[in-house]
Image (cartoon, rainbow, N blue to C red; front, top):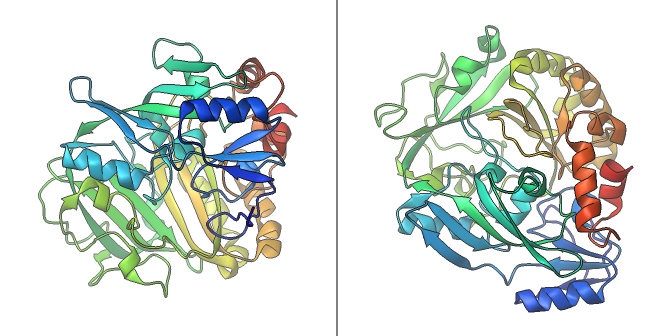
Amino acid sequence: MEEQLNWAGNYRYSSMELLEPESLEEIQDLIASRPSIRVLGSRHSFNGIADTGGSQLSLRKLNRIINLDGVHRTVTVEGGIRYGDLCRYLDEHGYALHNLASLPHISVAGAVATATHGSGDQNASLASSVRAIELMKADGEVKVLKRGIDPEFDGAVVGLGGLGVVTKLELDVVPSFQVSQTVYDRLPFSVLDSGIDEISSAAYSVSLFTDWAEPVFNQVWVKRKLGIDGEHEAPSHFFGALPAPEKRHMVPGQSVVNCSEQLGAPGPWHERLPHFRMEFTPSAGNELQSEYFVPRRHAVEALRALGKLSDKIAPLLFISEIRTIAADTLWMSPCCGQDSVGFHFTWKQDWERVRQVLPLIERELEPFGARPHWAKLFTMEPGQIQARYERLTDFRQLLLKYDPAGKFRNTFLDHYIMN
């Protein structure tokens, strides 16, 4: 097998083989014949969450749209479909998802399993749109769990890949809508002194970008849902920040052609909610990523705490993004039970130096009960993380129930969940 790397090139998978089944029956046979197996999504993870010393299984060829139900407003898809492909289909049929992550390149099942999110005070993680989940357990049984019916549903959705192979997902959809995106330049941190709520609730989605070199948000990406957030024309200023006169990339020096359309031009939801276009390399490409979630009520305090590390963060950074996410009820979601703010860091690929600064960030965020993104880089101890999930014990029991022998578990899950 050729060497398998994640998309950013910072992680080398240790698996012995990569399997690409084309049917449920083939998945069943592969699971039965392998002692250790782990599903690999679109490789947009930065740590070993998807790794295994055994076999890796890709759902790349199981990427069909099974059914669109306009009466109940749901779409059923296979686990390997990517958001960019699903979104085009939905929009053509007059429907939309409630939100999207920065990248449309990621697989639906992978994003759901790790509680990946977009932005917006009223917008919960992408996993919150799951209405039903179908997965194949270690014994080959196909299990379907439905929201509001099965008590294990909230534990299974953000399953971190440990319960089985997610073969299908039923997602909530909404009527298609238009979005305009305007980027505003240089918003001082001090604007947040009275709280983040007024700014983060000013549009459907608001992303604040800073390089931490000075107490300023270099750019603010404001995504307005037309018909909800007012008139089509974007405001002439955003809390004093002025609209960018030309299209921007949040990472200095990167081509703006990679980014979704800006300058207030209305367009389909799936072409504006992501920061990047499906047909181009997202972000900086050759990078590392970390993200920490804290309760939204602590957003300004956490911002000030991180500001004390600006001289250590800035030299290692491409850019940092701060955005809000609504609470959900999914046991292992970092936003479970709390409206949250995410502090995201896109690092230069210098792991030795980044590894030294992450504990400093984690120490500053400790008073706020920070939870790390499961698929990004962090150095927190298992006990710290486990203490922040009220349903951790229940999730551990769920893993043991669905996969008693640990066929789907790996070093990552053993260390952070089972330890």
